[in-house]
Image (cartoon, rainbow, N blue to C red; front, side, top):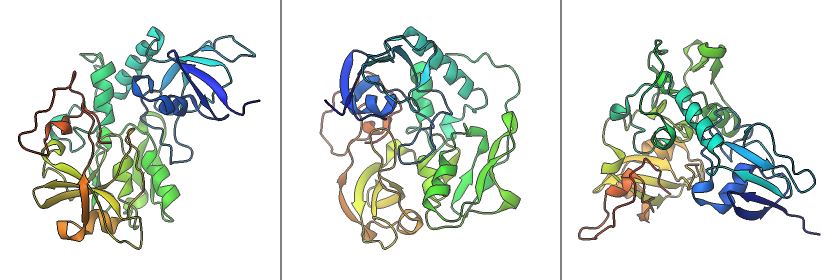
Length: 323
């Protein structure tokens, strides 16, 4: 008897280990059937189930109980069952619900993409491009907060925050000194520090990488360049605090910023220390391995690495992330 469970997602069948979530089962298949995720992060315990963008329809519960689930479920927190059948992009219910979720996420989010450093690699831009409405029906005043510095290198712009909790989980799980969290409740909830404390630990910069929107930004990179004007390069160095494997965002020989390497789904492969991120801003500090692969739907792909290379235009221009 096989120890694996079979699950069919949008007509494609895969075998995965028991306990695997629907989202991770879809990721093992890949492609367009993978639900979007704004709050789930595979490397952070407790993440998921907050943004509701990964809702899917379970049209068959299992082989033993083939009844469909009456409501849409969050794929990031729902384990698969043997024989389960799931609909994502093939379900009109899912697409309509996702459109509503995106509208809710954009209720308070300012339309300041032209001045936001996250533009070009923002998951919310992906969602609004694919599922958002052309106009907002929201007429009330948006919530507004003052920008605050939660560290000498990190700025918090709470107006853009969607309360995904990723930065809180990151600080809680990879550092021993978490000083920020969720204050208040309901529509008053916000990310902040207690009594104006600042985040001071060697891995605090990782909250910038896990933020899916432009709420937490790198003050050393703010307004210096757009991501499609710089070239992401794989590089590494010998570091006693972390793996030293990073992505350098360069223009010529100048390093504009240093980030952790991210996978297909925009998740950090290995967290890096602040020394690598903020203090090593010279090309001579690194062993450069070569350019990173970029999705063809990303605006960053418009930046060619070599002159004279003819690149076929993508079918649609989205706001994808680097691989």
